[in-house]
Amino acid sequence: MAQHESDSLITTEVSAAETARSEIPDETVLRAEELDVYYGEEQALDDVTIEIPDRKVTAIIGPSGCGKSTFLRCINRMNDQIPSCRVDGSLAFQGKDVYDEDVDPVALRRKIGMVFQKPNPFPKSIRDNVAYGLTVQGKTENVDERVEESLRAAALWDEVNDQLDSSGLDLSGGQQQRLCIARAIAPDPEVILMDEPTSALDPVAASKIEDLIADLAEEYTVVIVTHNMQQAARISDKTAVFLTGGNLVEYDDTATIFEDPEHDRVEDYITGKFG
Ligand SMILES: Nc1ncnc2c1ncn2[C@@H]1O[C@H](COP(=O)(O)OP(=O)(O)OP(=O)(O)O)[C@@H](O)[C@H]1O
Ligand SMILES: [Mg+2]
Picture 1 (cartoon, protein in one colour):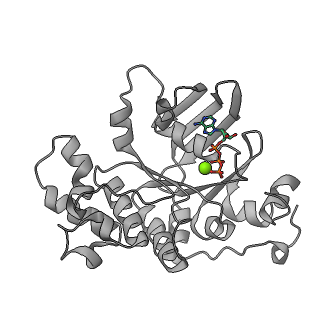
Picture 2 (tube, rainbow, N blue to C red):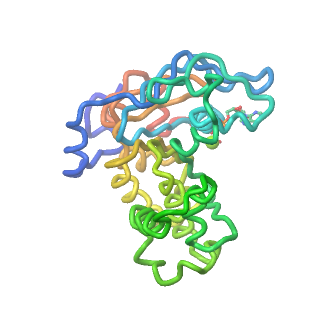
């Protein structure tokens, strides 16, 4: 266990906005209970119970293969697309189990959007990328307004407002990732899942996304997987540490995880002794 704050790997700098946010009482938006996930015979998550608060940033950290992406994909049922994948236990979004028979996974994914490690714009114009979710829903009203709002919320509007008809693929990597965030925001989700969203970006582009994530948490719940401890410490309110075997070993306020974790294994991991 970390005895002194000066021992900790990372000092958490808390901005005024974050302080204000941390004073809002937590309301659970996602709750996993005794969640087990298997790929065929292989168990990838083991008995995971966690409550994720609304409109906060929750970071998921842990060594490669510990089940972080699996957990994220369970939340909006992206795992449905993997035939060998089986889920046991419960996972509730706003109190409703997402694996109930009457849940439409497509509608669920509009409420729980996702951003991946590698920016993946469609080979379409910037406008059509952002409008994609609306178009799929058959929404035709106020599309341009929504495109602008989403691009503004993704901190990209100022850079692209005069080129909305050019291809999303012509943007830089960092811009493409913000375009993907705008695309996730446009259908007005509640939760945005991000799986290592900055690991393919240069430090400047990554830092822009980090700033953006803090702003997004004003309106959305953000769950972010990251291998970057400093990033988790900088941007998240809560941190969940998964370790090998698909176990959630510790989950707490980010400052506690990085400054005074309960488990030695967690401290070893965050101080770089393994992983
Ligand atoms: N589609 C799949 N089919 C079979 N096994 C899988 C599949 N996806 C993941 N796994 C296995 O499940 C376990 C957890 O994988 P997962 O991708 O969730 O880990 P992770 O924590 O995201 O790792 P990384 O940090 O490398 O991205 C691993 O043992 C992995 O091999
Ligand atoms: Mg992963």
